[in-house]
Length: 345
Figure 1: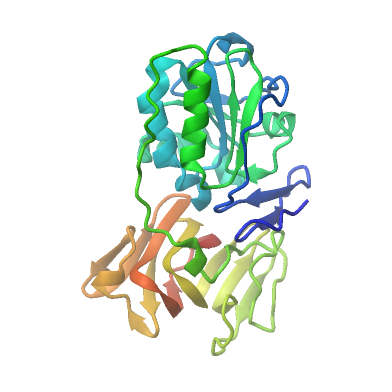
Figure 2: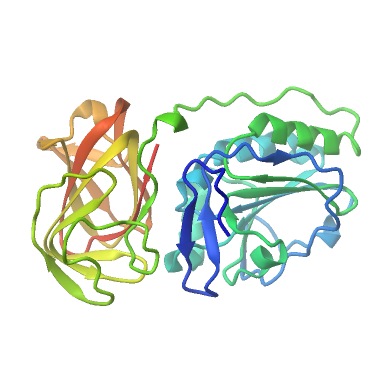
């Protein structure tokens, strides 16, 4: 299933269960539905963070927000300031938030990886690990992120796919809390964002051959399970990955082996990567080392060289320019660098 209303609907063929899944950016698909029926019970949860095990049936009398997310998804990450603010504002007034963490990549199944992300993003509400997609399937979900609001009687009353519609979502929270608590504020939480989605000209790019969302400009192409020695060629087309040197092709990522470089012509302000391994990478923009004004949150200058230290499997912000524009990115990597996706802001 593909939703054409998304800005960049990223459809990936997930290797477990062969289910089509989507990372969804801003989508103003908002439905204040009066009653969508009884909420399915949480199923197959393999671990809990910040909470003892919870059941929807045991939360009658509360308003429950179910948020499907995964910790390396930039679309999910951009929603977290809003969700954490709602927890702070309404948890004492009858709101229970459960972040159902359903992994996109194998490394997102590991409890300690999820725990690190919960701590890094300041999440204080309950997080449930849905490693086997049982709750995902129970809710008939196909998207990261997706939010369901459940009322005091256990009915789904609100459903939103993707980023955006934060004021509408908070108003729905207030309306449902108003059914159990008369002293609910009608003010919404203002949170600033510097992302202009209309000016992003490059979609999410997956590097694993099973995901097939990163067209290669190299004639060698993908070679599943094999190491390929890519010949360096001049990048000419936007939104196409150009490789140089030796890279191992895996189902969900590529791994640098020898003299590895990567080139990409993109249009955005911010460049993020989902990466792993233990290595260091150097970032160049338009043929020059990245300048101070464009350093990403995870990029540091070492003797004038912009370096990103890759020490865990997560999302890294490698470029954060002052404004939107078209640029040629070059990554010079050490052996052992594992690259899953590019995302942009």
